[in-house]
Amino acid sequence: MPATRAGQTAYELGLAFGAAATGSVMAAVYRNHVQAASPTGAPADVVREAAGNLGGGLAIAERLPGELGEAMAATVRNAFASGLHAVAIISGGPAAALLVLVLLLLRRVAPTGTRETPAAQEVPADGALADELAREVIEGTEHMETQAPRRRRPSATPTPSNRPAPSTPPL
Image (cartoon, rainbow, N blue to C red; front, side, top):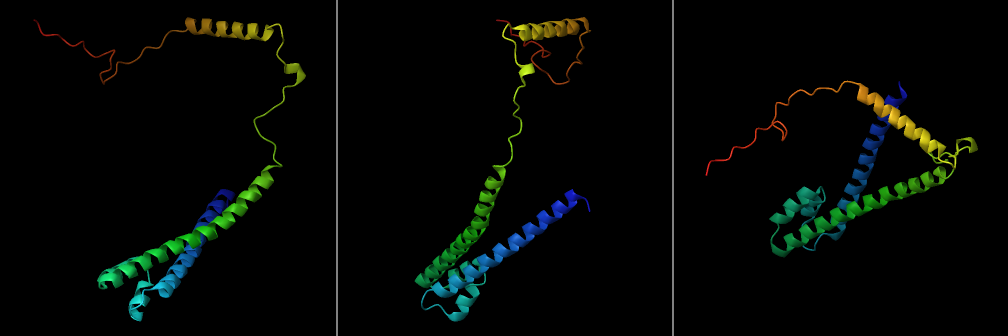
């Protein structure tokens, strides 16, 4: 298996396992929060159904009468937020640890794109290098002038250069 293919497979596996793990954590936190913080007076079977998922919990809260329904909807929303917070904390820990590891390892890597100029390549103080570059530019432009200019095909769409001039009505 080529290395690029193996890397792609590892990436996809990591994504799938990461989504499954964080989804499981969020569902567990949500379920526990709904069951622990459900409003008093809510029937046990209603609480059990609301703990199943957010959409179901909100649908059940809408069917409950008055303040009980509002309290159940608030509980379901808070449970969802608690699940998100737990996942963010769990995901943020390894991400922060990875950041520290990368920064520690990159301290040892030399920056790229920077070279010290050897003494032989230093720019002469008398401007000889500038004179040489100017000669090359002049010779290059003379060469360009001897070549035949390219002709452009007329454009099918009107442009300011090929658009007919507007006619003005007589006064």
